Length: 324
Image (cartoon, rainbow, N blue to C red):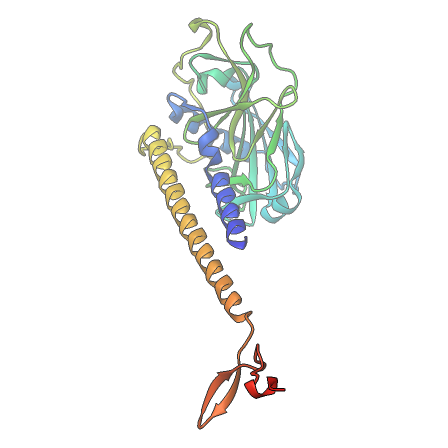
């Protein structure tokens, strides 16, 4: 019974680890390099608002004139406080407790983005239309808050997900359902269901929105050349974060192959464990049956012990006893 419980626990853990891979439905954002350059520049502008910042207070920052509808903000926190307390409300984001930052730093800055009418320009999804603006939440090293290109951190929720409340969104086209979309830092868009109207959940940083499948190709805006972005005078040169890795489809194949091998090995070990457990259980039963029998009495015959019966079944009778 104990072996079966351990096996079931291991199986549940394995399914939990592979669940995001099995469930995710994803497409790639074309020309994600332009969006990553924009992230670095907006981070630089956001840091200009952090002049003697107070912990846990968000500061809105100014953007270039050609980005009038783009909104950015910066929030400086202690990493330990983010993990133990979370953030009750940061713009549209509600950050729960248990958020982990890697690599660990004492201070971090959460940069908020609202790309407004620039959403489809930088995060074009062919075949989909945006019902809400793209919102970004990225983490950076907050030890030095002077303007400049700061190291990017990776944050993820380890307990409850981060919730994003988009407020009012556009109605979806007839015959299409709204969907939450999360774009990771490598340009992969993952779709999930909308929760309670206009709310989405996420476990990692990136960019988020609500989309729906468009009825015609004309509704999807192709990626155009990005407008010139003028960084602040104090900023460093910003280089695109090009991800020259292996194609994502190859990674999916590798992950499925490794997952299948792990499941096969696990089932083989489980079968051998159950078989060995049953064999040992049968052996113990036989030993208990042998030990539970009635022991024979012994007596000394010469210099040896020999089994002997305590009572005879029939008493011998002499023939002379019947003579009258």
